[in-house]
Image (tube, rainbow, N blue to C red; front, side, top):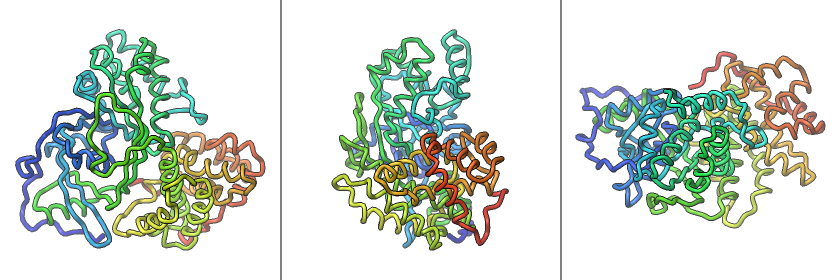
Length: 478
């Protein structure tokens, strides 16, 4: 969108005196304070009819900035809902405390409180730290460091676990010690069976630490699986200026989101939860068909566009989708994935059409560089399942393989990428031809890399997105 000029006159800062929303008690703790949480789970919580009973204390990840900015305005912020027809504005007040993630003392205090009923997570797919086969990896660098810190904590020494899961495990130990009772952990990250992934990661770390904590977690902590969906691009300076101009107050932390939203949950809440279903969430017994539809069709298309689009010189999802080469790659991948989405009620044709309309909303500047991060983790969930299923059915799986080939070309065209296996990617890039393709494919799936036909197909598909303007080695992540 065009930049909005600054307000002509000074405007007051957003606070609860200006927007007198009630401040509910903290009953939900969130790890991973960011734009998506604020556009999604916090929005649903505010819309629930019992919102006055359910305040959120949200902890940041690597940096304290978001917590500091929100705290300056009493944790209120504006949600800008951006459609093709214009913008609407809503002040969200369900977050009542924003905390630096390194403040494990406050995290432990909140989880030790009996009224805290839920921990929600948006910590990114890579943060769960499981090995490629889905098992807990006690030798991962972050885990090794966390175990040292946890051991020191058990001995009464000060220390802060470096990962969100390390901090969660420490806080769960404090809850056990306080006798506060059962609690639900709700993963809202883009992972298949994310509740089960969270359970394996938390129990793996707890078991490696000892303290008999794993037994208590097994008996007292439920792990809820979810499918989450709302496109939430990064906030820009023009968004901040627009709020001042249109709303008459200064907000340092507005969030922009598309009108569409979806939340599907499956699992138990032993200490209760907000009535999210009355705000539009869906509670189901079997979440797998819904999460696969979203992971493969929405997230899979995003990954295809992220790599193919940048190779062809595009910056946003809408720009890439308008490119016939990128659009065809998405449609071909969808054709393959849709063959394995046959559960009743999914309505795949309507879902695909809705995605095209959502992706084509040029007023939502969803940056491809943002989507491209952590590819080795994301491709395992977005490209590998469809490719494996197609091969098992006797078909080539070339539409799915093209996503991996586009990523291989992308990491060969830029050195500025974020990935948990970045060192392995750089090492593989020193190879050539199919040797390079095999080495990079192995970082995503050893099983696929062991299949010579798949390696040859992926290698042949490399170069499919010859660029009018190639991605630059100095591309920056917004």
